[in-house]
Length: 90
Image (tube, rainbow, N blue to C red):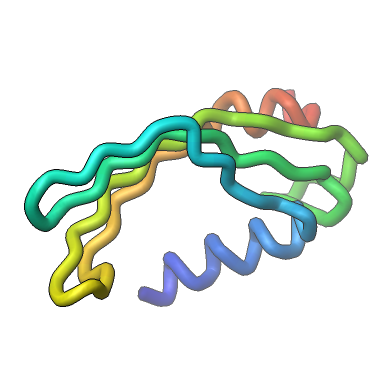
């Protein structure tokens, strides 16, 4: 949980206007699958990379398990390599 919280904090600092855009979703029994994009402007330090001012847009896939209307398990995958490239990390 602490690693997840640290990761979220880095995103909030690095991309204060960051948000997710859902392009597609499917629900089946107790799972919801979403495909979309994370978008934001790199105006804060992110993973040691100084702010570039670049706008980013990278693919995201999420799988959530729901019980009684509450998300009880989450798996998310973001194009981290694409994100680092877009902010000029390499």
